[in-house]
Image (tube, rainbow, N blue to C red; front, side, top):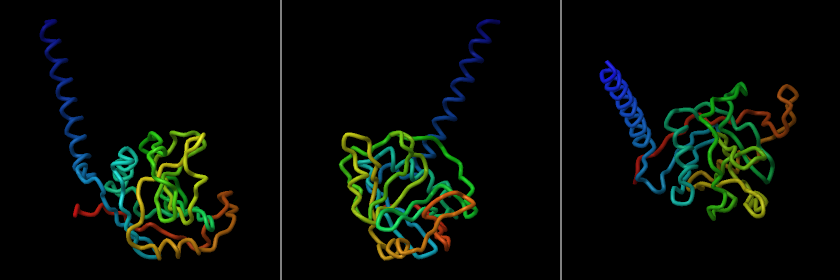
Amino acid sequence: MKNLSYYFTLCLLLFNACLFSSASVAKNIAIDPTNIYPKVKLETSLGIIIVELDRVKAPITVDNFLTYVVSGEYNNTVFHRIVEDFIVQGGGYDADFVPKKILGDIINESGNGLKNEIGTIAMAKESRPHTANRQFFFNINDNSNLDPGRRWGYAVFGAIVEGEEVLEAMAKTKTDYNDTLGWENVPLTPVMLIKASLLPAE
């Protein structure tokens, strides 16, 4: 009887391991793991932006971002924060400013050598270093104050390769304090990320 129970437990563990492995393989296939510099198409309400991501310098951050992309989690989200001559931030809320689900926080890869220069894409985070999850931002200026030094910085993981003029249009969007949300720098006219798509490898 004990042997039967042992073998049943062993079979159950092996079955669960296979399921986990299959899920991991499916996820890895979806995020195109062999593509070192994957590209993502961002269809926004102001036009199309294409970003090239750097898996060499920021593998954890890129895989995290692509997981949200291929699952459709970035579709119909709002760029909720635009600070003049600084950043355009989004990825975390729907059109009604309802928070989107979070898969979990990731390791901060800000020490990878990539700088928060104009046209780059980086992960937003809280004051603590390893708190980035789904929100990201575009640098609309050279923001060296966001780079790591004696403190952790904000991890850059790619850059715009097409659609710089769209980012410029976003940067000019008028913003104000939103009384309902209690937030500064909220666009008066919503700027939406309609769809994010992982492009086929070239």
